[in-house]
Image 1 (cartoon, each protein chain N blue to C red):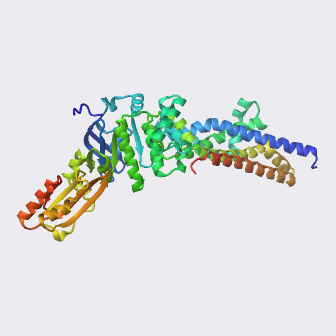
Image 2: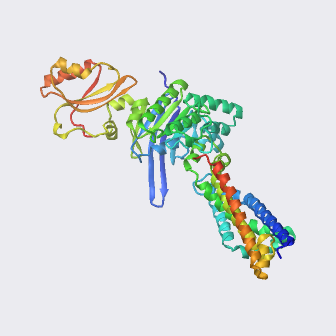
Image 3: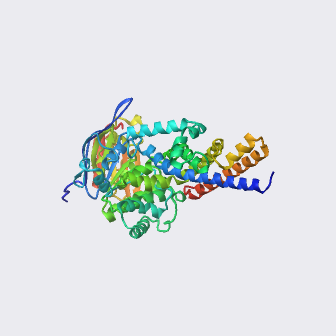
Length: 339
Length: 219
């Protein structure tokens, strides 16, 4: 498919904060291209600069140098008024939801429409539709304080969608939520992406979030981009050190096995119900040692990875690898994989 | 001596005190509310940062707030005469009350607005809200409960000031307390006026807090 122009392009973005204690480089020469319809994850440890990055995208933080091109417009060249208008097509949701506490759910969703100058009756109608879309059609008159964290984030999402944005920026949007609520919010984001075609940028420190919904990912570390690619590429072959740390969050397995031949098997969802490993063991008649495993079920698919120790005999080892590859699994031999 | 004229006088005193307090509070808010907003938004990293305006406003507020009310009352008598035509009576007292209360209210409003979570302002900015829209649609409505608590405190403080104006024949209950209790040693009259002042403070405070809690949707 022809990609065309990116909807968001960061060109050599740097951001330096100056304080009495000296200068701090939050972002150092960061370039990224995000295309329409993508769910783009930006992942990094805390303090890596990802929050600054997302705030540069909508110019809440003005970059010290570099350009942000959104939908063909250079944000730095816009007047204050033009920038405000542009922001209406680039919504944002936050870790702490940032709802107006003195307004009901419906009034919260109406808020961006009031700013955009939409008529009150139309705004109310739209708010109702959006709250239904996010599953809160029965909570129009509830105040945020009466709702749970997940429900608050749903209101925030409805509010962010009110002005029909092209892009939705999510700043650690699930970090304050429990695991099951996180799942449901991520599912909602995915639904919005598919149904409404809105490009989504997700800032997170959790690899799970990226694995689950993102199509592309940028790993950011020490104010720089360490690695960029599709989630599948990065997840199966992390190139950078941080990338490896994120893919193997629990560090590497038992050191006594180090030095022996091992291989990593990546389950990318293509082998749903097939018990690949046990059939390999039965077919090859070799025992294997599972050294690391991190599996999860995503929408009926087995996703994850496993590291197994290969038999010492080279022919047998080769047989194991061939057997697994024949099962459409991604297999790569790893010699030492200290994270 | 507790005859009808005394009661009439006390009744008139209550009326004058309420008139001075409420009218001064209102006028002082006309100045103090924008002043408080300006103190917040001109701060560094706020909506409309302006170092000069911010420093000048702070200096003015601090100077006015450091002058004791009784001294301010006498000091600005020429101004009072220029505006009202006289420096005695309850209408004249409104001038120094407003001058003293406006910066106080400015500080109250400033601290109320500063309680607001910065994330909410950031969210409004991300939606493309202008500074004016943020002030009207976010800062003031979101801090309404706190602003009402501030109004309760301010009005009772102004009531206290208005009683001090009795020393320059400012009218109201304070005037009666000083004339009878201080100048004529009629402590019983003074006692009654003090009780009345306490009751008015309780009522004002009670109304303010009631409105504040009714406005508060955070709980």
